[in-house]
Image (cartoon, rainbow over all chains, first blue to last red; front, top):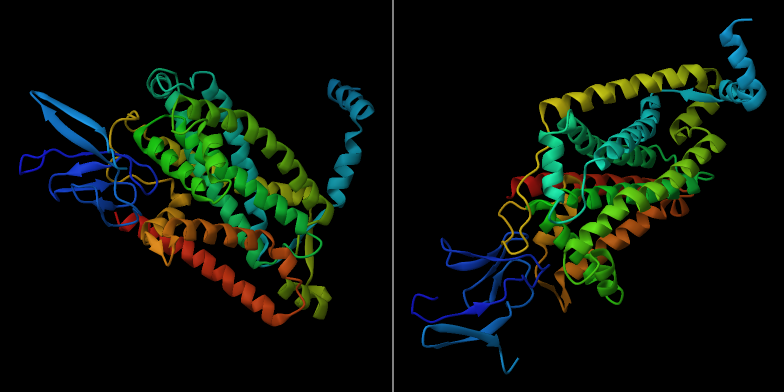
Length: 74
Length: 361
């Protein structure tokens, strides 16, 4: 969940060499420990070796449930 | 006739061992100021022997499945009598073996021992170094801890970048798309069956070639000895050189024993496929220079992916290094200086990148 209350769903597989990334609360970014790759919370690759943004999913909320699905346009 | 004489007589009749000893006595080893480097190959062989023995002992308890692997190593280290020591020796000896193998290779490089007619000795040595690194890479995964799990993920992804055969190589190494139980089974098979078999054959060939051509003398000494033949010295292989070699093994054993006993090898945390890669993740030190290079390369170099440039660069450098004896015909002084310079650069690059990799965390 982002500070503005919106939801974001990203795949945790780094686009560089496939390590599992993690959210870094201290940096407000998504970080890959393997080769110091950095993404923003929308999955855009900011620095380090990652060549592409993280794959992201569509998120919508119905009642109390959160639905995540593959992007239609991708 | 004593019992000993009788048995020796029987052995002679059925094995003809005195002929072998006579051959060993006839064989000589040159003595000079670089003679110490002759011990490095034998030290590597000694450590390989330790790996075989301790590896067989570990096999008695180790179980190669994601559910059991970590626990079985834990069991070896906590419950099996002297299990911690055997595992610690296996891990330390593996690292020392890679160190002595690299030292052996660089000493052969700088003393130019790869020159004609020893090209095949060099090629079989490079193949053995590849096998030793394969042992290291496959063995690293077997305890199934977090570090080794992600190191394997990255390490198998790197050949996956090669155009054309990349994806095939990746699935062959992993036994599927991802690092799973299939990968562990496969790495176990490589580590305890395929690689030991290949290593045994190649070590045999390598030693045979060393016996065929004898020890190489560096070109600078060859020239000195030509000018002053009286300065040339040599000792019999048996027992003189063998006893000196045993002394070197003894020192290696002391270092190994001290390291294994005082700095027991850690086990780490059990791998969790769903957890993120931990901070401070790194490969074994001998892959660090490549790891650090890949870390420094930008995402794109011109139109090509940065990793691909790195992988192709290392591949080409490795190929050139392998084919070295065919470049260096030992005739042209300028070419020889270039090659020595390239060797210094390679060694310096590996050391600087390794140190940088450890400091830059």
